[in-house]
Length: 414
Ligand SMILES: Nc1ncnc2c1ncn2[C@@H]1O[C@H](COP(=O)(O)OP(=O)(O)OP(=O)(O)O)[C@@H](O)[C@H]1O
Ligand SMILES: [Mg+2]
Image 1 (cartoon, protein in one colour):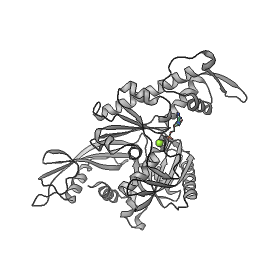
Image 2 (tube, helix red, strand yellow):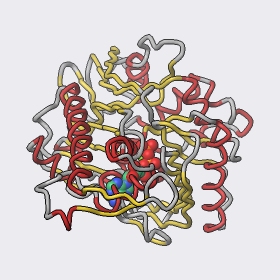
Image 3 (cartoon, helix red, strand yellow):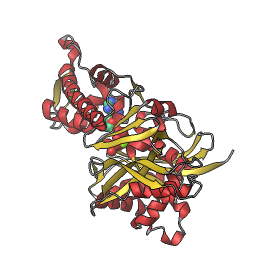
Image 4 (cartoon, helix red, strand yellow):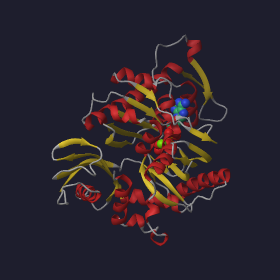
């Protein structure tokens, strides 16, 4: 069976994860190597210290190269952060051929029209994703090429980000000696790893709660309808514990991982409720109430659920998403978070885990790795911008809006 070797690098707020995998035509991923390192130099999904970020990314790349024996030249890289914005935009054209058969050129012109919206100079387009087509007023068409019509309209989802934030991310990877195949919005990558086609057809919200951000993607009728990155994640839970229980950060993180729950429940007998942990000064011990700990966690969890709900409402598809919510990212491992979501929003909720992995993939079938696995899947599905360009203009590619536009068309045209 035909396969290609594809690399994904998830530069997260808490970890950098590089995956080298062979993608087979049937969707099977054969993992050749994984490089996992703690992240440095990132805050809420954005590079804030370039040298620290370069070190973390480089070390992750080197680990993945050592394990796989594969020299990484290019990679698909995830992008997130509060600078991300998204909107839906339609483009319309008259069908060009005299016999009114719709061609790929018509589609390309319609998509070009859709993305000719005014984008402020400090922002750039990351994705232009056609969601559906309208031919002479008939809606919901997924592939119009070959159909007959007078008027072709395309609905697109456009994702933009701040130029500087994007440049710093690109630099962090390039200084590690790796060129960018493509930047992919993190929730779209995570969605590739944990959603089924059926989820997307029925309507689903992907929620990836990591360390620094909560990434959201709403899919309707198989297409992407709304995306958003909120600057709150698992680290905020830990910080709350530091503030309220007056513990050092590493103790708070330990308490969260060992005793944490998104539903505090009833308070237990005092003897069972109290746990002893390390305090601020050396040798100091401190007694912590598990019930209080989980009240702190629950308060933050409820706030995150409300933010997610607001975002879904903003998308305009509240109540029309039968597949409900798929929760992923490291914070999805917080016990009873899925239960809290289900209780507060009255929708089906499941934990999204990457599947269909083979080879050296033992630990990747867990929520924190949804983005990294999804980047490889995205690469397998959409291909690389690098394949379109000659080696010499590789570095220039991301600076040329036209080159990128040509690439999006190739990536998403039916
Ligand atoms: N068992 C667990 N219970 C609760 N929280 C957990 C558990 N395991 C991991 N986490 C939390 O998950 C977060 C890390 O998740 P993840 O690895 O998805 O983040 P990231 O991708 O590096 O960050 P981001 O996507 O926000 O930039 C941390 O806050 C960590 O405390
Ligand atoms: Mg993440």
